[in-house]
Amino acid sequence: MRRHHRLLAAGAFVLPLIGLLAAWELIVRGFDVNQRVFPGIAPVFQAGVESLLDGSLIRHIGASLARIALGTLIGILLAVPLGILMGVSTAISTFVTPLLRFFSVLAGIAWIPIATLWFGYGFGAITFVIFNAVFFVVAYNTLLGVTSIPMTLRNAAASLGAGRWQVFVEVLLPGALPNIVTGIRTGLGFAWRGLIAAEMIATNVGLGYMLFVARDFYRTEVIVLGMIIIGLLWLMIDRLMLAPLERATIERWGMVRAA
Image 1 (cartoon, rainbow, N blue to C red):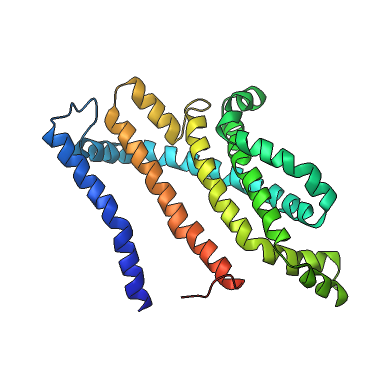
Image 2: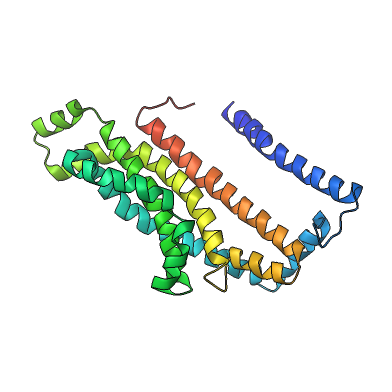
């Protein structure tokens, strides 16, 4: 039954994408759209094959994924301790929460101009933009997770002789984990958009850069190919990694019952 349910869910997820492809081809052919304005499926597929054969697509994908991984990792490692610290200290929370709310609006794309001034054009600037997109969202969600843990659980752990580290590892972190994972999933969505925007400006390799260069040469088939690759990569990251992790986390800590 579980396998049957998964197949149905996969079919329901893929079917709209197939419908989109069919509509795309029908519109391009039916209205005789100029291929330089918007290409059909065949030119985009050919551009994908060519970029795979010359290795350029792999380089662009690899560079983008490396940046998103490093920026996200740094953001998580700094955001989670800050969020937990805010959750256990009213004074720190009162002071930092307005700053989080202020900078969460600026996180991501808004940092690109100053990031290029600080770090130059390249890996550092783009990683900084990604870090900003992830850090504030994860920190705020971690704070929400910690504050949702009943004080009775914290007091019970302390009364049983748990030290601060034990309370952190065995009570606060596990209790906040569902919110942390949700924050990571949301932050990565912002980070992915920031990555593409930053790569159009601050580097010479990456999926955003591929789109930007293709525009200069009127290669709309490469632009559409890049858009498809970006969307597919995010779908794979979200559906194959983040969604199962979020589901497993909330099932593990009793927020929902496993199917």
